[in-house]
Image (cartoon, rainbow, N blue to C red):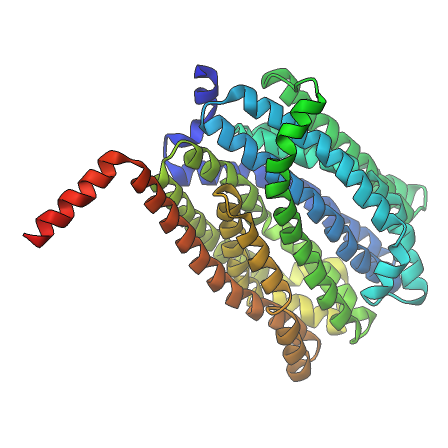
Length: 466
């Protein structure tokens, strides 16, 4: 019991510091992986074949789809373990960690198989044709079967963050990123494997991330329980209660992105290549914000589990403040780096127009993405995961399709990006309103459950009437 309370370290101390340390630490690991993807795109651009860059763009939309499934399972694992730790239930936390990992691997394997058998259909659905379609399918056919390894790494990292151990979660992704970075030039250029080499390097990285996420859990946090039918049956309902809406929430983003990719495809492969470069720049620049969505969840979860609602509300406010600071700084750096980006990717024409539109002015709008990330973390850890589903699906359907259609009609290819970000801002406001509702309801529920709080409210009411 004492050990569990000691592990629930987010129930004490400065919340903004917790958010900053967790996000910055986690972002180092995330950006290590994203940076390798960024370098992949640089290497592929150096090959001088627009169809290769476009193929990676189409493949990226589908990989985003598969990765989103893993993120949903990781959210469930992190939320359940964090709340158990906050409530001082160390044994329950370990059991839930074990079962989340088992279910993640099983569901991940089934999902990967389903996607693998439909690669050509999915790539064609988002606009890939001819040689570009063949290249995208070949690239994906190598990477997609490794999804169960990615699931182990993502769920293991989420469990580590639930314990407050962002550093070891970070190191797992750093080791994976290093393996990818070393293998990329060897396989792409040294062995002249081009896209095949990039795909093989990614698979090796996923295997390394899985292994390095599991080792610290075994060594420092009591490892895992021996699974039994009864223990698995106990946790299937709470895991699915969070995982299903979280997976649906995450799947909305790649579906919305697929529509954006298809809309951009109407303006040619150069436009798709420009968007693919932006897709690599975004997580590298805003890796801290992507990390925040996973980092703030355990902070909210532990404090909610301990019944500290004032700290839950403060954590949400500090998360938004942290988001605003990061977005302003990164957008300024993007704007200053425009000449270097142009030279690095040998940009011209529509690709140059799109990248310059994003690098500076449009990237400021990423603040609204951050608002949705923080709100979704609050929903998932406060017992309202379907709110995050509503927000994400709304943002990627009603907040994407009409805005992208209008943007494309008015401004062409740049309007596709503009419409996507404006729609996101609208649904960020919806997310804020829903979060305020959830936080108010939780505070009211706790007050009604506390007899001293009820007496205090009654006394205040009588005093007011006098």
